[in-house]
View 1: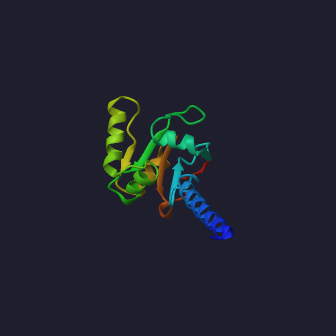
View 2: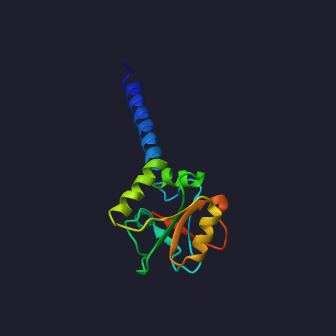
View 3: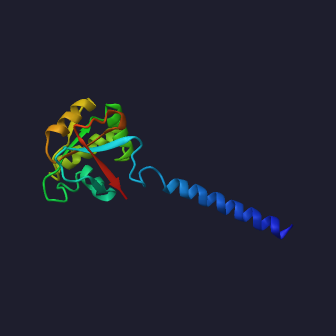
Length: 154
């Protein structure tokens, strides 16, 4: 067999594997982008951006204060709402049922307060707009300027 053809075949397979691996590791979650979801906070919150690791600790109830030490109040859509389902899937990497069990477990163990859960994104936005130091996640299409958008960085 021709050595050049074998070498070209190996390079092609290696290139395809590298391309596949790169595609898998550069998912939207790796980039701090959550598939059309927007992280929001109260308009008076001094934070305009968060590292992805800090945001995820906050939204998972593991970190209960802002970088300035003030308490975080989490607001989310219920996982029966399309946005709530997407948040459970894209941010928490859980089904709606797993999401509910996760929060029930944390609250039952006394590790944190339960997030305020809303059936409607407008209700969630109003909660964030009226609750200093709150944080939430909504769909891009529901974003309104009465709340502040937070940029999530890697």
